[in-house]
Length: 183
Image (cartoon, rainbow, N blue to C red; front, top):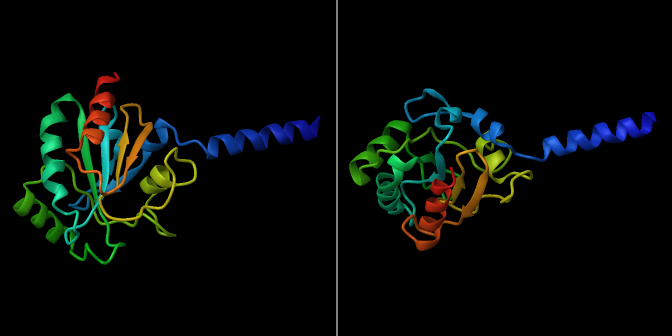
């Protein structure tokens, strides 16, 4: 009987550790571009498009289409959360102030920007551990800047888009619209 109880306990521990649920995503915090700690729970009930970004990348012009997507759908509940990362070719070397100024002046970005983080490796931010870690339905290391994750209103990870999928693509737009329609 003790063996069965132990086995059941281990199975339950494994199941809870290997499942990223809505509460987990909404309980994660990160520092915004101004250094203020923000809970993703502040965005609960919204659809997230989470993107690791960089200012000196071939994909950097996606800021323009990310902003257009945000403007088109923000009133329906879309929020784009941008996380600068310098892990790919040192393409985000700037300070928070430099990143903020670049995004604002070059692309007119109004969606939330966060402080620079690591998305892979031993210092991976907890958000990216949830988005791409072993328990994620779309697990795997981030390969490059501008990888996008779509998260539903309930915090469920819905889809992952590689950098070549642009924010104005039919594939991404359709997924955003479907996520927004799911109340």
